[in-house]
Image: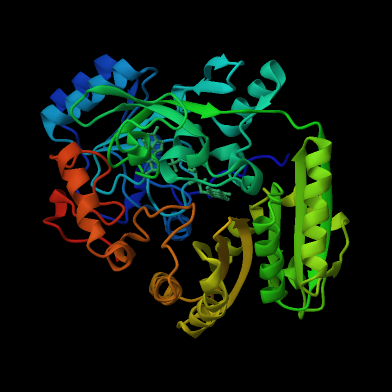
Length: 497
Ligand SMILES: Cc1cc2nc3c(=O)[nH]c(=O)nc-3n(C[C@H](O)[C@H](O)[C@H](O)COP(=O)(O)OP(=O)(O)OC[C@H]3O[C@@H](n4cnc5c(N)ncnc54)[C@H](O)[C@@H]3O)c2cc1C
């Protein structure tokens, strides 16, 4: 496993770091005193600046200019649900915004305290609480990081949840749930929403509620789902129950090469429709296949990996092989899977490019199979038509019975207008995707960066989401100004862009 990459460095001393989104950050003395009696509470310059940002690529550029998106007023580090509820009560009493932070590995600015106030850092709430080995259910605290979680689960209980995002080392269980994340083995194990059995939540009124429990219960709408993907806007997740599988004893790999991305997509679709759901089924366009796999720039690579019972894995790989060959695929170099396994979490190149002045970002969307070909073509073209665009490429990263996730990587030129060009590229790419029928996001979520596309995408269903927010959090305390919700704190106006 590669070492986790540290966030990019701030230029200048901690005291001198300014907020990109200006505003008064100071908490009044009474609020600070009340918070300090509950748990460790910091107003230290380094900590409030660090807790003012995540891995949003634009924030990486601002860091090099000595800016954080928005400095936190104070950082609270509770260790249990009762302390979280007490912090929420103080925020209620003093009308303070409260933004939850896990690993702060989000890439859309979701954990940025847009209006200052309190950042509630859950990373001191960590560890496995209990495991029901008969049912394969693990109860875990929200601030547990990926490696700590899986190492303990695998070594002590021979179980795995199977959620391995590229940010595994730097993200937390609560963050996975709050962002509706996807791991790289999702075609076998599912996305995080398929793994969640139930949640404990602290609501904006301070109540501690428990959702879920029994499988597939028919007890009204699924309340757990309300909070999965809510990005800290509807409640604070203080405990998570997840489904676990026996650790796989057998693994097999394969690679195929296709003359076009469309042929490769047909092979993925046919495989899944025939019941083959290999853990990894990743199809790269001709640009990424050249860049990462040494192909000639006209062909596309499909990497396949599965694990589990040997009989099932062999049958799965047989089906994938048949589907690949019948869609003009040929057998490729299986060593490419090994290479991907070793380098898949290494993102150090991103920071190197940022330091050179380039902006690089990714946009992942999902859509039914019938729409994917036009999304693939139109979105790449749209990115490249934006002012300052340098490159755009794509891979298919997660497959479902009815569709898939397309993951676009795009870069902007070195320029003084990085922020303007970045906005232009996002507008072009995201709107082209929506026009073709794609979701705004598949697993990175919305945060600040994609808030402006929510109304366009959801239509009047956005009112339903706003209604939920208004009911659960009438004072707009929890992570205000995110996921396209109207914030009372800015008279309903969007802060950015
Ligand atoms: C290099 C890199 C690769 C990535 N690869 C993937 C990938 O493969 N798959 C993927 O899904 N994502 C990926 N991401 C995005 C990111 O890692 C995920 O969104 C992750 O789930 C965020 O977890 P976190 O603990 O860092 O949350 P944070 O960034 O701290 O928070 C994200 C959001 O969740 C909310 N939140 C966090 N914890 C809680 C809680 N306990 N209760 C309520 N709300 C909470 C925050 O308020 C915020 O809105 C990647 C990011 C990077 C930088």
